[in-house]
Every structure is written in C-alpha cells, then in structure tokens.
Length: 188
Image 1 (cartoon, one colour):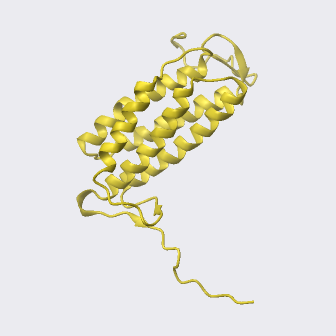
Image 2 (cartoon, one colour; image 1 turned 60 degrees about the vertical axis):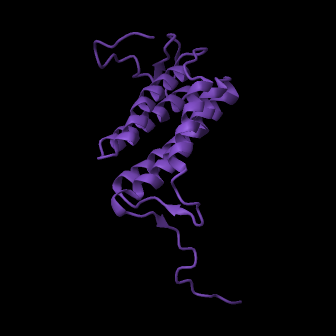
Image 3 (cartoon, one colour; image 1 turned 45 degrees about the vertical axis):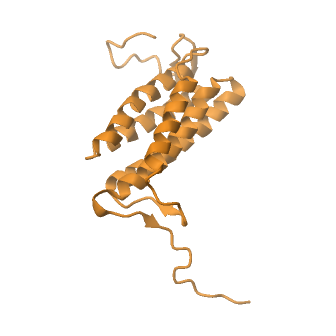
C-alpha cells in the first residue's frame, strides 16, 4: 500500500497538489482528499477519546476502529481498493445493540457533555457525520464501496451510544436539552 516516507517533507505539495496512493496527483482540496482528510481528523479525535480513562470494554471497541478508519482512508486514497466489508458493519451494529440495551429510552435531546469522555464521544460523532457527508460527496463523483459509507453511519450511531454510556459512568448523568427554559412569551 503506497510508499513509506523516509523523509517527512518532499516539497511535491508546494504547488497545491498531493499524491494519491496510485501515484495520481490531485488538488489538495479534491473530494478524495477532503474525504480521507476528514477520516484522519476523526481518527485523531478517537485518539483523544482513547487517552481518557475509559472502561476496558469501551477502549477494546474503539482501538480496532482506529485501524479500520485508517483502512477506510486507504479506500478513499486508492481508487478501486476495498477494505471495509459487511462484516465490519455488522460488528458495529452488534456492538451498538450490546451497549444500547442497558440505556433507558430517550425522551429528550442530549447535549454534548456529562463528562470529558462523553463530550469527546460526541465530538467524534459529529466529525464522523461530517466524514460520512464527505464520503457521499466523493461517492457521487467516484462511486465508492457502499459498505464504507454504511460503516461511517453505524460508527456515528455507536459513538452516540458510547457517549450516553460514558456520561453515566461513576454516577454521572447525561445533559438533557431543556427546550422550555426561561422563555419570555412574546405576543404580537
């Protein structure tokens, strides 16, 4: 998969282009670069989340996902390459169901917060949603592996559920949106 960098700077991107894994040069704002760049950002947020004191079962779920996000970035960077399968998507669904079954049903919207780890889960979720949007933009121009886009959709759902779980750790709670907070009733 591509060349290994022995030198960090190459000067080849000074003209506003970058190389894809197949050697093709594209603009640095190309839809492919936007897609795999957003995955890189998501993976960095996942790294921040993993730096928290997480329960071992949550950390064990997130660590392989970081590798899979790198694999998915390879799909976007190398036209025609596929790394994500329906089994990856199914595993996320099974994991999501397992963590969700202990949570009470939602009756209100949840605000990001509750704990630092929960807030980082929400941040990862929002970056994941952006990555999914970038993947759809890429897919419209250059058809992609449909399982990869499903994977991002399920991952954002899983991150939402993990945010709920981590907010409740150690007696904590979720931050609920109060839609009726101190509104002044304005009349015509």
